Image (cartoon, rainbow, N blue to C red; front, side, top):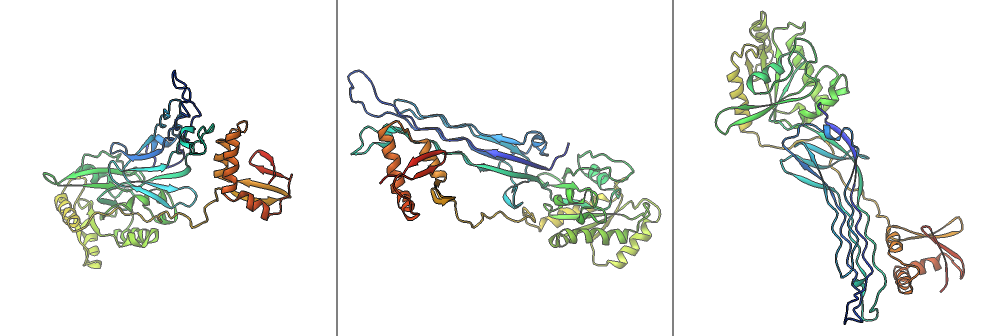
Amino acid sequence: MFIDVAHIKVIAGKGGDGAVAWRREKYEPAGGPAGGDGGNGGSVILETDTGLHTLMDFRYQKEYRAKNGENGRSKKQFGKDGEDIILKVPVGTLIKDEKTGHVIADLNEAGKAYTIAQGGRGGRGNAKFTTSTRQAPSFAQAGSMGEEREICLELKVLADVGLIGFPNVGKSTLLSVVSAARPKIANYHFTTLQPNLGVVAMGQGQSFVVADIPGLIEGASQGVGLGHDFLRHIERTRILVHVLDMSGQEGRDPLDDYVKINEELANYHEKLAQRPQLVFANKMDLPGSQENLDRFKAKYPDLKVFAGSAATTKDLTQLLYGIQEALKDLPYESLTFDQEYVEEEKEKAPGIEVKKENGRFLVQGPYIDKLLRSTYFDDRESLRYFQENLRKNGVVDKLRDLGIQEGESVFINDYEFEFFE
């Protein structure tokens, strides 16, 4: 099943807490602090895999969580780092921010990887807090929380050539006879319900990738039919081959078809209308084709038109060499019309925020949360370290500025403290 869009949540692992431990060995009566650091949390990494062609693996599982780092140990032993989680995606996958829809990263090469959620740092053990005046710290640091993000994965197939045209003009038949691809083919509209890729070999070391793009009908750029679902796959192609049914057996005029399809491309994005384009006049083995081809060439004398029949393979070699020649002069670009992700220019949430709200003095923020998790309130040394940090970060001064009085309560997260100078 072809799935080209997936919405998932990724959560990196938390860093392990530092350890409070003491060196107690025979003949070492004053061994000192020996608590090791916590391990770093695992990260969530997206990596391309050439063996994948769909985002099917993300259809049912919507949340991916990396391992937490282990806590530190005694004897200054570090905790083990949390294991990263590596999510494999097809080449050509865009990572988008769920909220804005902007592109965070474009995984457009084989083996390309991107860390979408960074694991938290491990906390320091009490051995790291010794100073000249603090020889036996009885506290350690808590590990940091890992990043958490909601993202959208969007696959846009990577191909050199995109086959475009109305349904039933012979795009799938053309792909099947020039490559090893075996798309479903039948004589009714919308046989093709997903993009199909095929490699065309043109000699030793020479080949190009062709994509059969379905869903192009009048109004596709406004979302009619499957238009929006598959128009995105044309963005990656270097050139377009416009397949026209010159026989008119569907009751449509190939001259009108040419105009309508190009209007849909321009309506989807103006740059798509400027993409190099070759015309393949298909079904030339059927009655009326030559007359329509003559009319088409008379109206568009400057267009490069190749005529033949995909069903009988007549004159397809000229088309393939024409495509190869056109690609020769075109540099490869990973094209996408999505907006690039830009970190919002907003003030970073302060590590510690001090405010008065509804008559209550509040202290909150990610730094204070980590400080609280690192504090052992039953331990005098740990409590002193906590108070020193509050004073050093200006919390006491800010509370004074807000008019706090001796004995009034200060709420720090879920804790209530009394204020004393």
